[in-house]
Length: 116
Image (cartoon, rainbow, N blue to C red; front, side):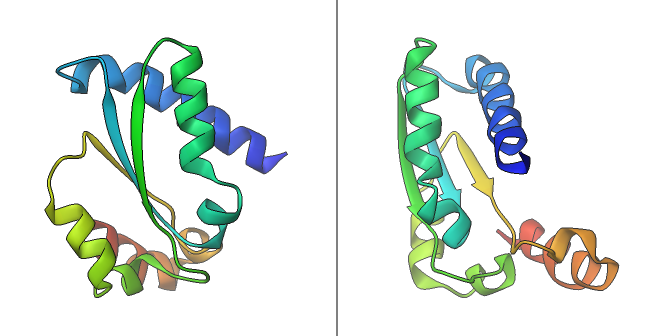
C-alpha cells in the first residue's frame, strides 16, 4: 500500500515538474537510493509512466543495497553521476526509517540531502 502511494507521489511530482524543467521533450532523472529503488526498478517504472503520459524520460541510478544518503555523499559512482550535471531532476531515496526518527533525520538525512 505504501509503495503504491509512493509511486503515485513520484508520478504526480514528475508530471507536474517536468514541463517546468525540461527544455526539450526528454527529461533526465537520476535516482539515488538503495535496494528499495533498485529491487523495485523505480527508474524504469517512472520512465514507463512518464512515457505513457507522452513525456520521454532518460534515467540513471546509483542504488547500492542498504545505503543511506550519508553514504552516498562519499560514493564515487554517485558523486560522478551528479557531477555530470545533465540531470533535470535528482530523486533522493533515504534508508527506510531515517526520515521518521528525529536523530537520523536531523543528523544524517537532512545534512546528506543538502550535500547531495
